[in-house]
Image (cartoon, rainbow, N blue to C red):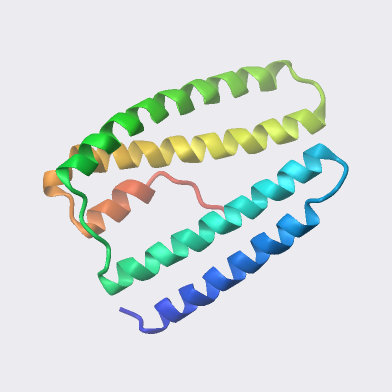
Length: 152
């Protein structure tokens, strides 16, 4: 394990929280779409901070294993959300075919990208939940993240 990673991840938590706070402060504008987009990005920054905190736990071996009760809960929730995400993807794709306003298309594509990432992540989680008896920590990472697109 690289001993600098937990420290670096802690720094990233601070940066993401700072960013979220500033975005929330600047979201007090009259245009509702701009306001919602700024709040959405702030929310994502808080989510990123939580993910960095979870990475620190993983590196330190502090991640708790899931119980059978956890697996049962996850199975139901994941299946429901996969179905919802799938339906939303189809609905948004259909909307993109009939909407002419580029401003609307821009926001719809943004939502569609999120829905696709969520759907892919949920499929990976479902596979991990279904294979729980043979899934190790490195398998979890591969299953959960293998189909998630990253943009650099």
